[in-house]
Length: 238
Image 1 (cartoon, rainbow, N blue to C red):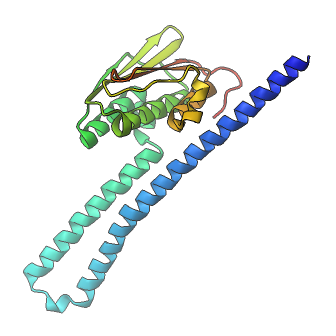
Image 2: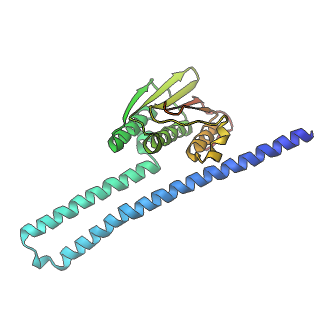
Image 3: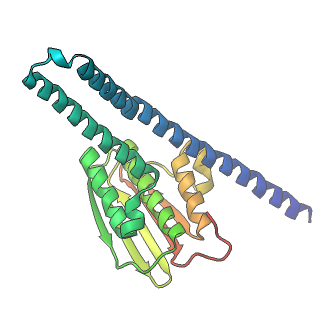
């Protein structure tokens, strides 16, 4: 009985530790988005405001051609601002996932990474059965975080994503040809290594009754495998 109580206490302490790590990772992501919105979108909007004010207060000093040139600059700046705000909104909640489904949303992520970094991303998907919204969102976020890691840390030139349906299970595999790393023996050790993104992935997968595996070797890339049931198991909530 004493051993059982000790084990239960250890599990509770571990759960609290990982929850704190996940919350910290979420807060860091919010800070990053807030910083980017401030440094990018708010500065562009401020430039737009100053430009419009300048034209309005000194319109009589501009020739027709100069006025067209200034308005053209403001138009280009407004389009860039709109596209950037749209990008941030997609990062917070991708409408493509709700509108077109998981497979299309994953292809969109791959295209976004290629456009951003030049990394070639190949995607293979099976025909998708209906999936619970919670499961779709979890898988989307895992692919998103994995591709962020490929871009920021792996040094890879290419990556592969496969989406497979096997009976009552869906399997997503994300692999790259980057520098890799030496993974810990237990997924629970990722947090202690400072790999909070991988810790967050593992927590998300557990919420929908799935499992996550990380395979990596220094100099030989990294592969993440996620398996989740196609039906949300009873008692799950996100």
